[in-house]
Image (cartoon, helix red, strand yellow):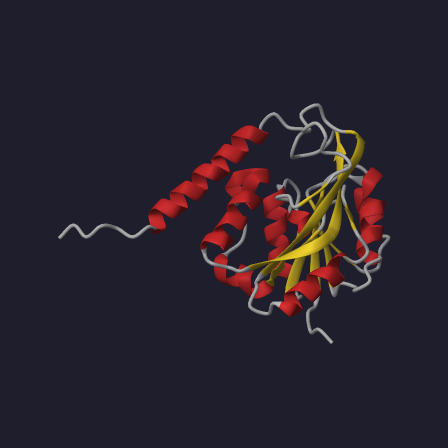
Length: 230
């Protein structure tokens, strides 16, 4: 029997309309999580009361926190040996944690597992790529990722200055450090496409991605071997 214990981290802000489906999916896992952390950025709707209906939720309030700040709060509070990510508007498939655990158990030297993402939605934002809904892809989606806790301890948390694109820099940092990744050849999350998507629904997104790319380039440049000038 695998000794992996999961902590699931879910940032949330004013998502009362979608949160029930997302939390139901977390608690319907065929391999239950040891810990479910919901980090609220200061919701003004009924999000807190919805989250607190679930006895297994640890509800942490951090008013004004961004998504990477919420994830870092979750990292600090995590008790599991593997951390998985959930979104308040997406849906983990019932076997998501079980599939991550199987992949990581099969490859004990791998620090990260990444599953497939199924995209769905009937009212995506205008900037959502055509043809994305209804497809299954290996995408750069944090909710498809599970990471061993010791990898976070060794290589650090999210760069909070990068906003929603902090996950791009973080995943690149792990890859550049040589952290091995195992692919899960099955869907682990259903990604909802809607007009409130952070990824496609904000004008700042392109600039934030560029900031993340610049941060990656600066980090790589600073770590590159220097020519001997003597």
